Amino acid sequence: MRRLALALALTLACGGVSAEPTKLRIGWAQAPTQLTPLVEELSKRHPEMFPHAGKSYTMEPTRFQGSTPQIQAVAAGELEIAALGPSSLVLAVANAHLDMRIIADLMQDGVKGLFSTWWAVRTDGPIKDFTDIRGRQVAINALGAMTDMLLRTSMRQHGVADNEYTVIETNFVNMLPMMESRKVDLVPVMPQFSHDFEATGHYRSLFTLRDLVGQSQVGMWTARADFIAAHRAALVDFLEDYMRGQRWFLAPEHREEALAIAQAVTKESRASLDYVFTDHDLYRSPDLMPSIATVQKDIDWAVSMKLLPTGLVVSPKYVDLSMVEDAKKRVDAKP
Image 1 (cartoon, rainbow, N blue to C red):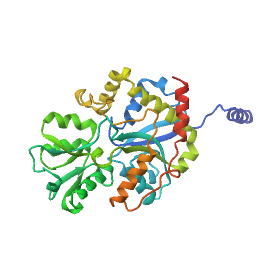
Image 2: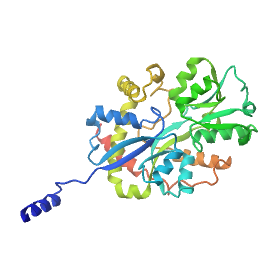
Image 3: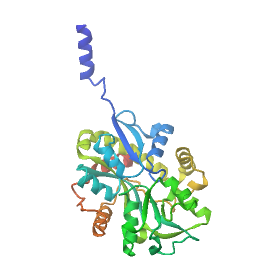
Image 4: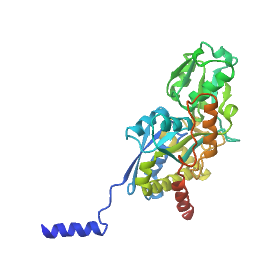
């Protein structure tokens, strides 16, 4: 027994027994706009691209209706990395009192030459201009999300008060059927659903996100400061692997397999996914680098429109891009 204890002590001292990998439960709402579940699938098909997976970290994509429900999950200790927008970051800090940090880019809307989220109305329907929304029903994915903010802004700018129309929360997948059955009169169209809307020939754009605010940092990864402090090395390993995976998806030479993975994850048709990783898609930074200036602009705009009760000075307190920077150095060093 004494020899066994001594052997175990020597094994531990020599590093023979490693610590458990850090569990990373990562929130996402819509694929393939958010690549999180696609990158996980890529890691299964090409594990050689993810040398740290299963060793220093494990990746567990967790689906949510939108960004705001992820705030509760972080507060409850059920989520390590949340996919938030600028407005939901403010809510996480100001309302939930979470000490969050922006750590990486997810996607940006309104970038010149690329897709911008548009709001669909029926070409033969009752909505001819903004004021026709009065008394009508509008669908969004989640209250407090960017879609909600944009809806209220556009309506207020045209003299339509928040209480003059009805807002219904639903999944983006349900929005086209709801429009087709005339249960709602206005919905936001994300890039993965744009083809289906356009194919019907029934819809036109009332406005786009670019029309309202220009470029917007609509999605970014965030994590609690204390979690970062405790698991920084694992997060750098994860971001290195994820950056390598994201660059793989964005590379034109991988397009056919990338679309096959998108189909496998989303169960959508090839035709409906043909926009992915083209000029008809949102922007994703190959370096996972968010636009902090745009985040601040989005927050200041929301406050000016009285869509947020309070503002937030994002940089430097609520930003930690050092892990992405370290990950980029590693990826660039190993082409």
